[in-house]
Image 1 (cartoon, rainbow, N blue to C red):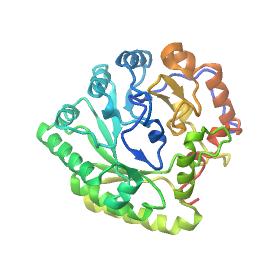
Image 2: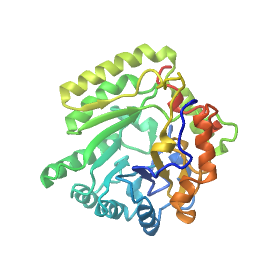
Image 3: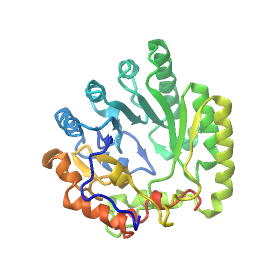
Amino acid sequence: MRGVVFPLRVKLPDKVQIEPVGKCNLNCRMCPGGIRRKGKQAFMPLEMFEGLLDQFKQAREIQLQGLGEPMLHPSFTQFIDLAAQRGRKVGAATNLTLLNEKIANSLVSGALDSLAVSIESPSETTYGWLCREGRLTEVLSNLEMLLARRDSAGTGKPRVTVTSYIMRENMAQLPQLVELAGSLGADAFTAENLPGTMEEPALPRNYRPVRDFVAWQMPTAEDKLVLKESFGKARNAGRKNGVEVTLPPLRPGRNGNGKKDCDWPWREAFVSSSGKMMPCPNVGTPDRSHMGDAASEGVASVWNGPRFSDFRNRLSEGDPPEICRHCCTASAPGA
């Protein structure tokens, strides 16, 4: 964003993403969350979460999401309640495989405003291949149960969005995903670009299988006609089924100088389950890049610290850090 002047000190953001759990029960091929399946369970302590909430006093919205599955956390519903009690709008993202009746009843009580449910394919075979150890029938049954509980509770909450990454394997299936979401009673469908090709030289070794899969599955210019047709059919399916459909642009966003934009490090904050503040969620895990330990050093100290300030300066001056150069923000599906 060369030529755009930003203040030296950046005000704390209105929206904050906090990762309750740093690992996942699934091992999806396109997600680094499976990297942390082995080893010590990465649960954010409830006390750390409360401390972060108190420091992000101005935040109007708290999103409980990251690479991990939040329902693994024994205090997941307490995270929701603590944020809601402070008057924050609360959202969460899940693969929904671990939903049970107790959690479902808590989720529809009114404290949770929105819930994103990842479903990568309407096909059991494709879903099972992409999300190893995941069963689509289980997810759909859980989603149906949750929406039935929401209807019974009468709260109208949470607003449920089905989400999916756009891959060569599923790009033609987006209309069917929208129809599936509508048939179950979900409110919206959102398709997102894969986070990026992770081509920085310093990429940790354990990321390489994910990097190779993403590079293989990321749509190219040859897929643009298929994507355009799929996007059009998905929008039509949304209108027919009463589902709000959100799709990424087929061209990357640019500012007035023709440069590809990214304002995430000014607009939102992301804190991992370990308390490390990362420049954005697309980074994945703190071992790739982090700006400091928000839990021990303090949110304000890290947010406006020298490491984060230098990071933002490089973005604004058109010389982005290596980790940003292959991000989905700098591309588009089929570009």
